[in-house]
Length: 216
Image 1 (tube, one colour):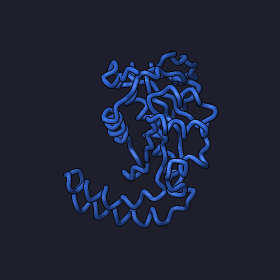
Image 2 (cartoon, rainbow, N blue to C red):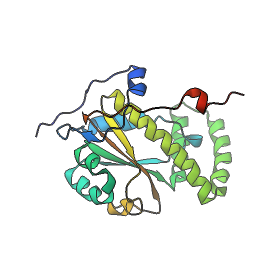
Image 3 (cartoon, one colour):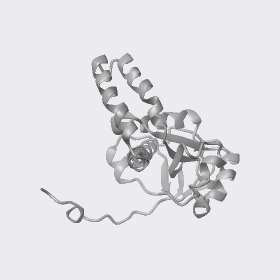
Image 4 (cartoon, one colour):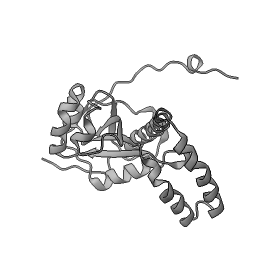
C-alpha cells in the first residue's frame, strides 16, 4: 500500500476553505495522514473559543486498522466513512474539565497572556460558577464549545487539503468504554471522518440569508 501523507493542496484561501467544503462519504484508502500532521491540525482546531477558555473538548483519533475494526460495529450507518477514511476522530467533552482550570489560568499568566490580578479575579468568579451549574447546564455549555471546535477542525482539515464528514449515527452509549475511556467523564458529541475524497461530496442548497436572518 502506498503511504501518502501530508502537504495535500494546502491553501490559505478562505473561500476555498469555507465555500468548497463538502461532507464526503467515500475516501481514498491509500491516503494516510501522519500523526504529526494530525497533531498540527488538532492544535489549530483547539484555538476555537470556549466558555471562559475551559476547552472541554477531547479527541480520540482512530487511525489504525485495529481501531477501525473496533469502531465499525458501533457506526453501522457510516461503514464506508469508517473503513475508507484516513482516520475517524471521535469528539467528546470532558465532564470534569474544570480540573484543568488552574493549569489553564496559571499558564496564561506564565506566558504573559493575562495579568496575575485578572487571573485571581476570574478564578474567584469561575470556581463558584462552575460548582453551581446543574449537569444539564454544564452539558449545554460543553456541547456548544465542542461544536465550535468540531467545525473549526473541519475547516482546518480543508485548509490542509483534506475532506471531512461529521456523523451522529453511532453507538454513543458504548463508544467510550469500547476504547477504554470513562463513559461517565467523556461524553460523546460526534464522529468526524477525515481523508482525501475518492468521490466528491455533493453541493447542497442553503436557505437564503433573508429567510434565516432578522434585523433589529
